[in-house]
Image (cartoon, rainbow, N blue to C red):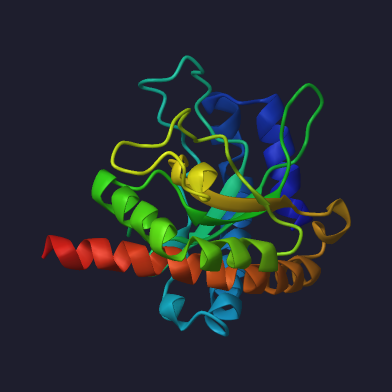
Length: 227
């Protein structure tokens, strides 16, 4: 794993196409290593969540090139790699398990983390999740609590209860969310060792499975309604 992190550190310091082209072989090796790790991660998650069985690394990983069309930051490359393991892959719209590797560099916010959940769902899916919270908020609250060490990400949240939901609900803070995710940092001591990182990630993601499963129950219901 250190080869991947080392490449990302150097890319942070030389984030331009000329440098990247000169070091493309290094990126190819790092990309291959991350794909091999992702394949093992998928297999590990499938031991407790069979809905991800059969996924390939390319179904779960992302290009390193950034889309700069609508961004003030015109640096051409990401300084992290990530894998989102979800039923039917990263573009399916289902909740899943996300591993993010990003070295912390001088003068740069960064850090590696694990996250689980559903990011910016489409409006009909979002409503279905909110209805799930209204009907089974106690179950979701318990699922979050079972993911020991993970914290609920409230950065994507409305100021008020969304239209159509009662303001006095005991699950008001959950209903305000626009994304539904829990996350925790990866300890630095497990990062360099690929086997240690894999064991840690699979063990921690196992704690989040009830949370992901409940979200996906709502996602599946929304998709069924659309048929």
